[in-house]
Amino acid sequence: MGVIYYKQNKSILEPCISWENLQLVYVSFNDEKENMTPTAVHCHEHNLELQYICGGHGSIRIGRRLYEVEQGDVLVYNQGKLHDESADPKEGLRFYNCGVKGLSLPNLPDNFLIAKDVSPRIHAGTAAPMVENLFRLLYTEVNENLPRNGEITHTVLMALIEILLYQLPHERQQPAREKDQLLIACKDYIDGHFMEELTVEALAERSHMSVSGFAHQFKKFFGFPPIQYIIRRRIGEAQTLLMTSDLSITEVSVRVGYDNISYFNNQFKRFAGMSPQNYRKAKVGEHQFKKLNQLASNIHK
Image (cartoon, rainbow, N blue to C red; front, side, top):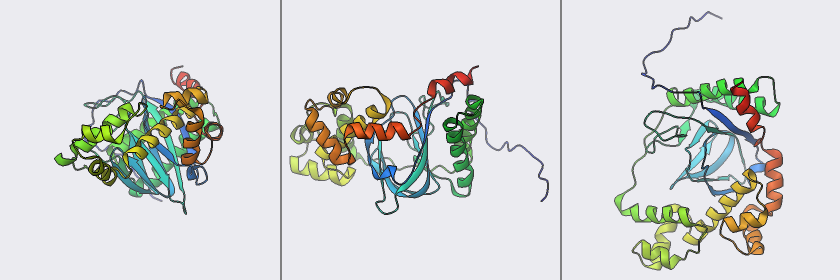
């Protein structure tokens, strides 16, 4: 084995990045069994999420695009970016993910890692083992509550972000066609008003289409009929609230637009395969959405 002397690569003019407020919010590992329960349309309103696929196959919808993912793919969910995921029923899907806040990059909103015209799916290629090891290290530090894990996770997180920014290839996405803008605007309206009473007739009128034409075009473009998308948006928000808040099941139901708790329970179970209460027990008990304040305080000691 030969000795390789370090020489800094200065070929990239790096922007000035402030790491002072960077914070790991959560980290989790999801195996094939866990991901047989689908995740509906949701977003992270206060943080960026990074996801590394370490096995299996699946489909992940980010915004209006559907991505087929496999081992070695990194997914970037900028703050507020809607997404959902479905694992291959035969192979399942294994992945790490972590929530990050306090990231501020030049010319981008807070907690954005990539610009809006850049593909959120990044192929790690030959760097995949290194990227996976960094995610695994974050998970281990938090899961095992190792000494000085605040400082270590902060350093590992900085390294991960630097690699994603500068050492992995980024692809540009084609902008939406002008004729699709009305459908996109309608979906955006649903995303902002999904907890309200929405009808296909009213949505079609907003899009200046007939009811049948609107329903057909919406499903063709986004993969779901309008009413099904509204349901998935509501269930996705409910899944997020069940994992990240202490709201009662009844309060969650009302928050996502269901005044009838029995109807909410039935809709949730039809999608997730279990009741809201059992979903909360399964997810909160197995995921690492905890010890967060401790991590944050350790960084600044």
